[in-house]
Amino acid sequence: MNPPHRLRHKENTVTPSPARTAFAAAATFALTAALAACGNSDPSGSAGGSGAIAVDAKDSSCTVARTSADAGTLTFEVTNNGTRTTEFYLYGEGDRIMGEVENIGPGLKRTLRVEVPDAGKYTTACKPGMQGDGIRADFTVTGGAQRQASTDTKLAEATKSYKRYVDNQIVALISETQRFADAVKAGKVEDAKKLYPVTRTYYERIEPVAEKFGELDPKLDLREADLESGDKWTGYHRLEKDLWVTGLKPDSKAIADQLVTDVKDLQAKAASLEYTPLDLANGAKGLLDEVATGKITGEEDTFSHTDLWDFRANVDGSQAAIAALRPVITERNAALGTEIDTKFAAVDALLDKQQVGDGYKLYDKLSKDEVKEFATAVDALGEPISKVAEVVSAK
Image (cartoon, rainbow, N blue to C red; front, side, top):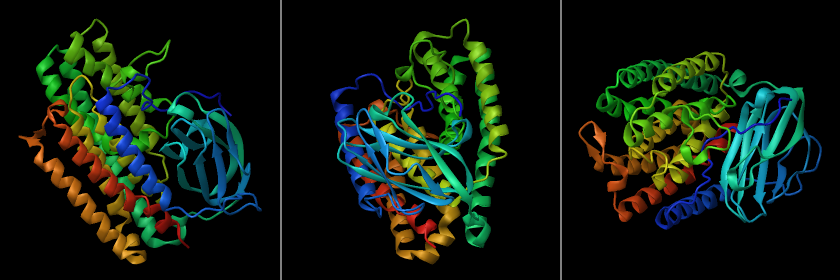
């Protein structure tokens, strides 16, 4: 097992403003409470190699009721009995993220369903305060299981469709990132500023894919607020600060070149990925969590205030995953599909109201009521989206 290291970049280590804290807390509590309500649980999590596995997450401990399970669809019921918001992860070899649940507030429960068809050594981790490497433990998967997509033609087509979507987004990401990097290297600040939010759109639509690959997501998208001692800051947000705050620096050209290299690395790594139906369901939910806890506070693009471009992209990515799964959702729970469509339309309408030309209003120009309206709409969408994993994993 590789030594642990920090994987995620959404861990805010600075104190946000009271207004932002209020909005973030309201969004997180409402969304996580809704998600918690939808999961089936086996509170014991202790019998045999199947059934839900209980996870008792506290501020200084992470007790997983079983340390092994049979291959197949694993269900973890995570209860936060601590005082800090936490996250739970299942890692594969090389710290590849197999599945995760984020933003589990004190006293709340979240369900993680993840397809693990292959035997091997895995790792569980809780992250109290959503920071650091987490409280880790070994987890063993035994036997083997057929992949859902191997036995269900609709699920197989869903994963193929989503892979095509991801591949196309990465091709566009490389092209736009190169244009952005060229503008930075040529000292064309205004051109680079215009390209910045457009380029990030392609990344934000597929961010759950980048997050599967250890340190790649932080290299591309680490925020200044999440830097730790000794970190080398690279990626989009480093150049964002150069463009909007400090002016281009002596190493800005090198940072731009590294950014292009890293998005090409993403393409190479993603080419061999095999997606599961639960990857799509969990990814759709994860992108909305990004909106509810990051974009909604205005802290993602803190220098440029172009958060609504990212907001739009996260919603687009969630919609794409759901669209790939739509035949299965329609077949197994048509009413849920209709509800999801209605809630997506409500969020789309709010975003459309904030359009300015080909872009969006800067986030710091939104009123408190407008931010609250977004938070409410995302919370409402998050509730039915959280049910998709259970629908697609049903036998």
